[in-house]
Image 1 (cartoon, rainbow, N blue to C red):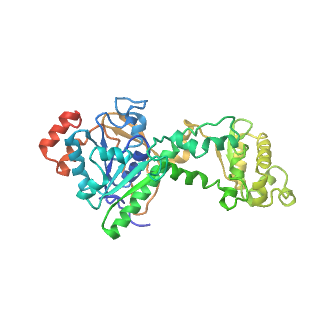
Image 2: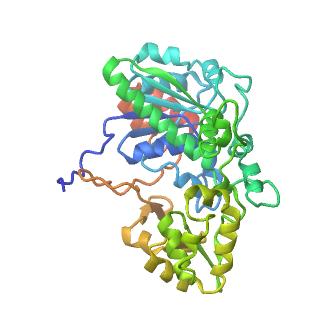
Image 3: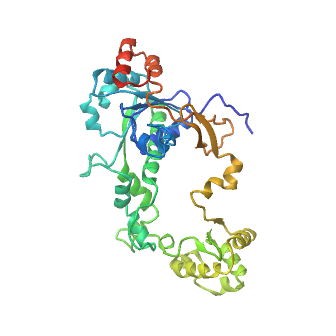
Length: 404
């Protein structure tokens, strides 16, 4: 085991201007901030819209904002004001990267094009988060998680998998998945700049990114030209692929490999079944008969309680887990043992619960995260450090009424 180093975070020294809001961009920059990047969150005078999403103890500090913006510093700038534009240009002149989910044309109208920023800082990496690639007919259209779920066939897949009607997955997983892609692209550009010495503009389109994400499992017969079958992965689309009902609740189990199926049939008193039934003795056959096999498993699981099945599956080395709710997952014994949920004292919100950095490093221990900032909390500090003239700082603070 290498000696732990708590003083040198992996991304220490990397400065990022975060001009994004809502979920996708802020999630990307929070991941980078968790690993030590200095993320300066530039907000309009009204702040990121997630500040208004309840529940909250105080105005502008909604719960979703707290979980997307920790370890950041907040600066309020009115980019319709010349002082605000000049202050941003000054901030960007010494930054490594800028992340933005405002359409490039709108940014250019404010006098903040990539070309103008690159004149001051040729090493700047501009990451533009957009709904659709700029070279297609959807370019410039607004994009939200629900729309992208629809365009990438998620609600339709849920119907194919047994849902009565199309519905959205109750999670902004598109925003978060694309946010991770944006963070990876930014770091890749930093590495390229290490070799070339120059920055660049990167476009991360939500639609194209999530088509790749969603169809990765489901290209199926369309993987070939001409197609040799329909799209879709049969095993994951069957309506029987769901938590199994037991005598007193539900259990989640994955009976997947040859060994799993052999062990399962032994548990239900059919030890000869794996060898004798051609529908189960190969992965190809099980995939083709997934619906019937999962249905049969479901019928067997009705015979015992959840706890009985979890113990039996553990003895048989079959992967299984209880079905958590949003309440019970917060008391999961593994998460409690690893200290995943941490209580910290926020300067304005009091005691709050945060989730820890999930990765483990041999040469670095993540410090307890700094809570999400109050609106404009660091305006004066950051602008002064960047070299913005004091008179301009005073005008900015007076106009935005934040950061004093």
